[in-house]
Image (cartoon, rainbow, N blue to C red):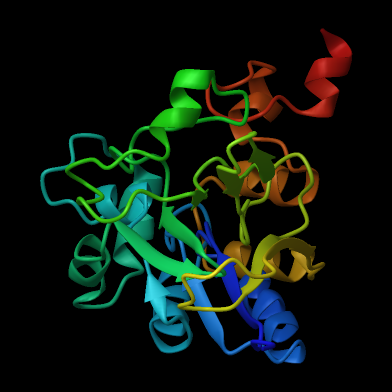
Length: 269
C-alpha cells in the first residue's frame, strides 16, 4: 500500500539575518511545506537577532540550541567585545533565557530511518566536526552521549554550525549531512537549507530523500539595515555575505580551523 510522503524543511545558522530568513521562508511556503525544524544559531553576526528569534518561535515546529544561543546570553561569559555586547542588547526580555533553554537535539523517525539533529556535534554545541572529518569522528556522530540522551541510535545525522553544507553516506547506509547556513553561508554565499522527504513516523523502509535548496536574496538590503542600526563589525559581515569568505580569512588570509578554505585562499596557496 502506498504511503504518502511528507516534507520537512531543515534550516540552521540564521545569525540575525532576517532578510535571508524571510527569503528562505517564502521559498518553503511556495513549496507547500508546513513543518520547519531549526538547528540553531539564531543570533550574532547579523543585526536582527530579536526579530529572527520571534519569527522562529512562531514558524518552527522544532528549535534546537546553537553555540551562539548558548554563549551570547550567558551571564558568566568571559569573552566580551563591543560587538557581542551590541548583539546581546538587541534581544528583548526573556529571549536570552529562551535561547539557552532550547533542547540540545531532536530525534525522529522517517521512512525506517532514525534521524538525529543537533547543532555541531553529539557532545557539545561548542565542538565542531568539519566536512573533512576522520573515520572516528564520522562514527562518533551516530553515538549516544549525555547531551543527546540514550534514545535509539541514529542512522541519519544532520547538523549545522560550520556554514558548509555536505552529504555523506557509508556502506552501512549511515548518512551524515550538514544543512549549511541560511544567514551566513560560506564559500557559496547563497542561503541554503535542506528538505527531508519520506514517510514520517514509519518504521518501515520507504522512499527517503534529502534535497539542498539555494535561495537568493537581497544582500545589499540586509547590509543597509545593519548599517542603519549601527551594527559593529559591519565590514566583516559584508565580506561574509557578499563573498562567502569567513571574515578573519578575508581580512588576514589565514584560514580558520573550522570552515572550509575559500576558493580564493586555495588558489593562492
